[in-house]
Length: 200
Image (cartoon, rainbow, N blue to C red; front, side):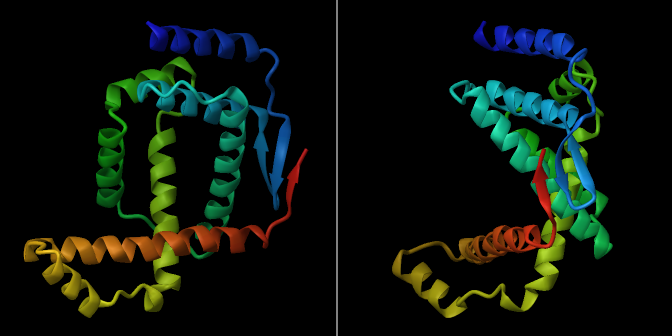
């Protein structure tokens, strides 16, 4: 009941605010802009995700800050990936999207109904996933020579902890992903310094 109430409240809020919310620029990232409407859409998406995961304890203020930070990060990632003409394989996007829906306990129908209710581009999630893959491909390319793990050390840990050898590749991949994730976060902070970010 609580989830239904929250979703109904969000629909009413969107309908009420739609008359007041405009495409007024709220944040500028270089020459790119983020509008009130962009922030509202991202906030509603975050509320939706949290309600589906029964995590309704996050305050509206925190949700708004997360929404703004997400949008700023995406603008920067898009500017950088467009600049380097980075692509994302369709099958990889499909697979990533499937895994995201699975981990978030979401169905395609739920996402579609959400986008329809809030008059959001039905490809909102797909485009977000695609951008993340492009960003990951860019960073993997830049730091490819530094995404290395100590295989000998991993083999020693496998032997010491009696881990099945069938898990060896999974462990190596997981360790490489840890390094990659560190580069993803660090490079985003580096990239932020290239663009003037103005909160209006």
